Length: 192
Image 1 (spheres, rainbow, N blue to C red):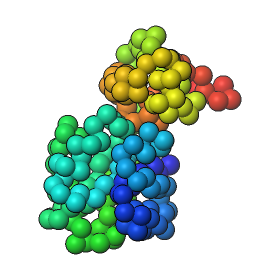
Image 2: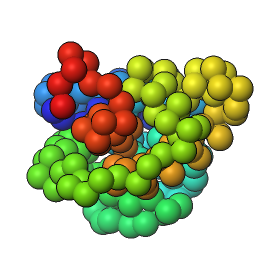
Image 3: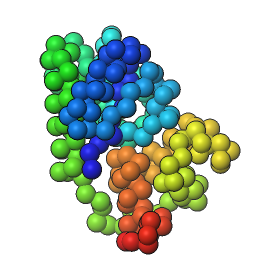
Image 4: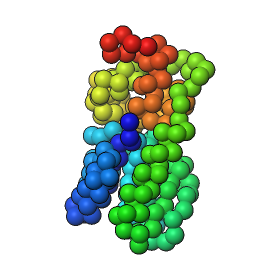
């Protein structure tokens, strides 16, 4: 299964062009106009264009998709950096759409090769964390989960970060998979 990609850009032409290039490469991608659109999507990778510095591009994403990896399109040579506590791949805008697609494909390949569900039992979740994970596994957004539980979206995101740490997962999909394998969530069809 390939990574799900969210492309954030307020310029429809740029956003739709990047999404189209990723879809043409066989990847699952969706475009969102701004960071607030991320509350409506599930993504493993976020691609964002940096009109200023890479740090300025990453800063608004705090609290959104905490497990997602970042690919930042910027002016300058390709590199990896840690910005705002996130591992970020910097892709030079001069490389065009091809460079962005190549970076996403490389990331997707590395994730599939590296990540395996933890062999050891995950740390037990609190009752609140369990209810949040249950809601996430049923497809609820952070906003919907917060409304159901009477807590803020930001509180839901904070709980999700702790869930990821406890389960050794990088994103929601992996957290749900680990929890289901560990018997913390029911699997569809009763499979284990």
